[in-house]
Image 1 (cartoon, one colour):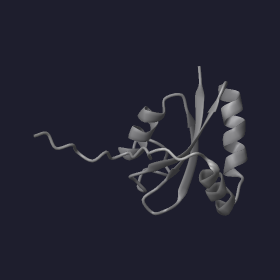
Image 2: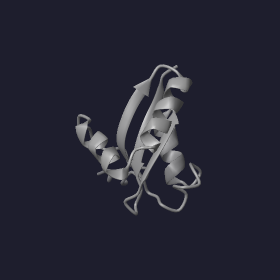
Image 3: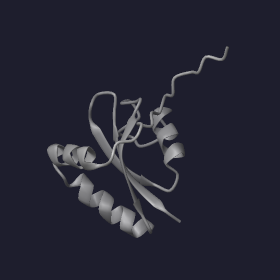
Length: 97
């Protein structure tokens, strides 16, 4: 099973780091207030960084390393990752015509 270490940006501009084995589900949980206590009242969130790990243990170790970084270092990590369309916890409704 592949694990994902992720950084989300909350609506107040703060950053939250976590791990999951289902990123879409976890982002949805953060968006509905059922994710982490930290993000409960800071939604919606936008995924800014992802990193895949082969085991939960490796993901937990990397999560701890990222959490120990200063904000500027986290922003540099985010900036160094190849860009992809951000995943938001509150997708905009699509208009069907």
